[in-house]
Length: 457
Image 1 (spheres, rainbow, N blue to C red):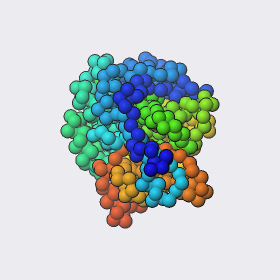
Image 2 (spheres, rainbow, N blue to C red):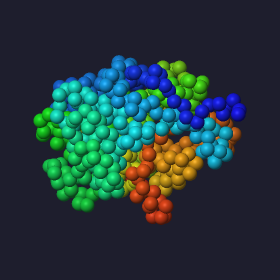
Image 3 (tube, one colour):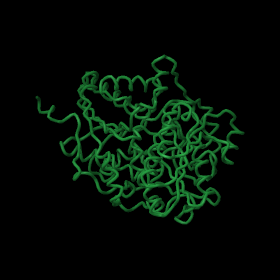
């Protein structure tokens, strides 16, 4: 066996090597992400302003731009040990199939019942809600991964959970819905007729397939009108990227264990939780001037907030009841086409990632749906894992990078995030296999129309 082959297929950390702190990338950012602002007064929102919606400890994490590391509470660490550390896998078989000199690694976050990375933040947010003495939580979910993860966390801690699931995903993924219900959550297709905002959206957009922005509005309404409940979000927010830094911290520790330095780090981007978590410690080194990496965000061509959106203050939700966040956005009224990457159907992007992108620390590309599923199929046939449609955007970009290395003869090291499995996405794979999948790309006019409605700040 060659020296290179001594690097195992799967690199695991042992229990004593697991991170015990989350890393806050904002602490190393020269330009901090812009604050959330009140849509009425246009003033920055502080702790008291956010208390009706979010848990107290999570608000503190959301607003903290300076603390580099946060201790992970022991109860959360104990829960993490059920499925963490997750493996960093060398994609030897994919490399061979591509005939590339590139070395490809992927961080696999699908080794838990929720099937994705979302559990990392779900247990943290549920823990702080329980500590505060709350009765329950409300949330939205796109593909269903976040809703599944949060239902597991709430069941573990004895909290009630109300989930509003984007209607198109609710219909496409009934089994994901049933997993949530098995863990005790109530699941409602959004937009629904159960909230004032849901009724309004249905009246204005008859027959709509929904969006994460719609579902967020309904979940916030229910949280703020029911005593003992708070709203939690699975992506976008600073606190979520903080919790998800466990992905990048483990990835970096595994690479360091074998002296591996990546050239390119790739993650799919919807709201930003997976990408932000994966790149966190690498971006920290980049911000501090210690090392340099190419960091690439990959988003669907059907919902291209980075590549075709504008950097501006916008509502985080379609119902316009949430705070305004400065982010790359397509406009809160933008409802993407019914593509199969449900977890990437958000009109905006994390304020942290938006600031880093605006400052030139990372790149962004978009990918069309059929090309993404071609990459997913190649990965499944070589690496033996059926990837989630969201993750497959990162696979597509990693394959493109590897083929470019084949063309140039460069031996780059590529790391990407495999956020989860696609076993609840078989309707999408059926469409692809039957040749019935098409690409949905918004026109310039579609985007201009929604962007024209941005709030004047």
